[in-house]
Image (cartoon, rainbow, N blue to C red; front, side, top):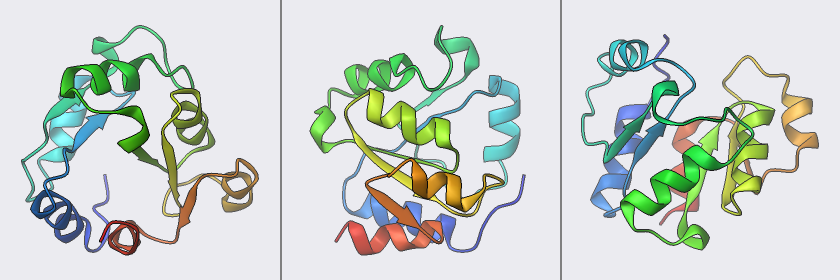
Length: 130
């Protein structure tokens, strides 16, 4: 896994704003832990892996479970991803969808999904959350 520039800084910024941060991935827990070990950030509220929820993206059940466990309001929740299924899942959960152009997904396909926000990189998130 490649750690993109300013990811740690952006995650720390979100934590300073008292924003709860969770991970939802279609990887198994062991893969997630290996990938997250590359970050210098450890303050995730919840880490959900493929083993934790039944239906894969774009079904919203994984997001809905996180929202319930963290006791947060869907209208105050955002999901950040880099694939069309990430955007679809966020929309299916009725939460804010944020697509980042740093993944392998074609950027035109991301744009066609009409996410609430389309970012060039993860650190642009700080412009949305002030």
